[in-house]
Image (cartoon, rainbow, N blue to C red; front, side):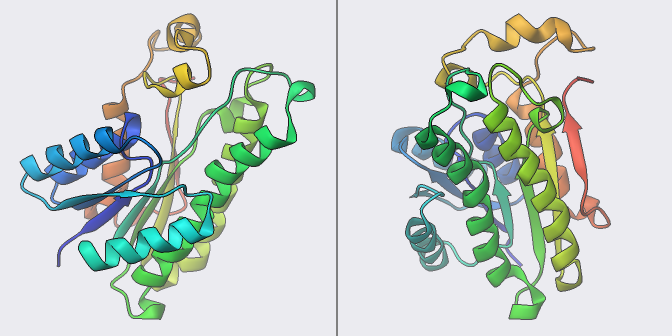
Amino acid sequence: MERIVLVTGGSRGIGAATATLAAAHGWSVAVNYAASAGAAQQVVQAVEAAGRRAIAVQADVSDEQQVLRMFDEIDARLGRITDLVNNAGVVDVGARVEQMSGARLQRIFGINVIGSFLCAREAVKRMSTRHGGPGGAIVNVSSAASRLGSPNEYVDYAAAKGAIDVFTVGLAKEVAGDGIRVNAVRPGLIETEIHASGGNPDRVQRLAHQVPMQRGGSADEVAQAIVWLLSPQASYTTMSLVDVSGGR
């Protein structure tokens, strides 16, 4: 059976690294992106260069109708997915809670939390043995922020990722009997573009001294954990929160 994984936010950073590594391990890949069509197409080309099939599919995962359209497109062009990586996520500029607008909170929780629920819902409908599927695996990308709280910077993001941790535990218990494993990785300080998008491009270098390993991590180091959790080698692993944080 062909393994097909949807990687949300797959055009850059951890998502792009996961897509290309999954292809190297035998998955065909649906690369979701919100706006970066060119970057997503580059990931598609990397997957195809590894000998697997790939498509790029645009959708804002916080929008239910766009998520439904995305899954319909994947069904038609690539096939029913067997695995899901809920990676799409955003931060905003560093701020204290009393400075956060309602619009900011709607965006942070819409993409980071509601998007993960919507994509998991549609994945379960396709993967669950209860619905005639073959089973599969879901990996949610959480964050070490869910443990640390990110005071004075990203309490909203940390709270959203705390929700993802609880979502992982609850969904894992709910679908374990339906052939679906659900786990999460919690990256720490990782060298990706997400810091620049929050107006803080040197954040990893500035905080690296707080990491016991004294450095930031790479997107590929997180991807290695994600792909292992997707793989048959993790066949008895579900409801796990795997920290990829250099000890922080």
